[in-house]
Amino acid sequence: MTERTYGFVSQDVLLSYSGLDFLRAIIGGDIPNPPMSETLDFHLREADHGRAMFEGVPSERFYNPIGTVHGGFAATLLDSALGCAIFTTLARGEAWTTLELKVNLVRPLSKDTGPVLAEGRVIHRGRSVATSEGELKDAAGKLYAHGSTTCMIFPAKG
Image 1: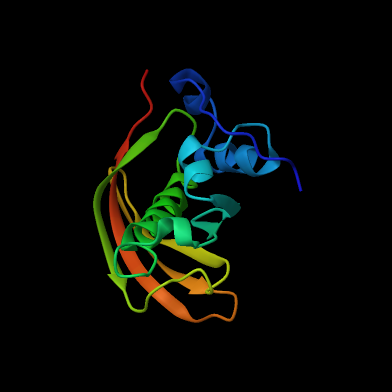
Image 2: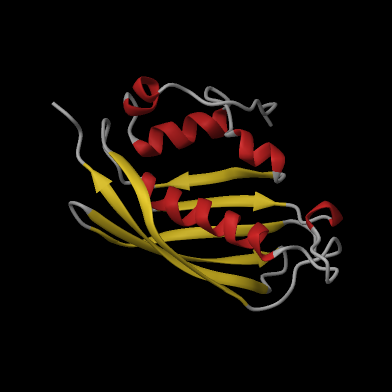
């Protein structure tokens, strides 16, 4: 595995890649992982056209006052997977942003859960709007959360 670096790139660099090529460059170590992934101990694991998968490790440092991992951890992994699934469909110069995120938490995460995988898949990719859905599961395939997103697509300029 390539050692992970963290940071960000300029908008010009970002827009010089297709979405899929950009994400594959993160996986390959040619582009740094976003700083947030270091903070929350998760990373992009796979990216294919219309699909993205992130892996994260819930731990006590993400616990809320009731002794479980805060729901924001699951929501962040799903938001990343759902949005990046749509990102994989973008051509060079196109951009996107999330309009809506819906997450259903179905069981609590804890430090004993082990690594979890958030997978997002595109349902619809239109000219200006795209939607995706996905799940957050443990290594045995047990469901912890599922969700969907709607994103706006911005055409390439010029």
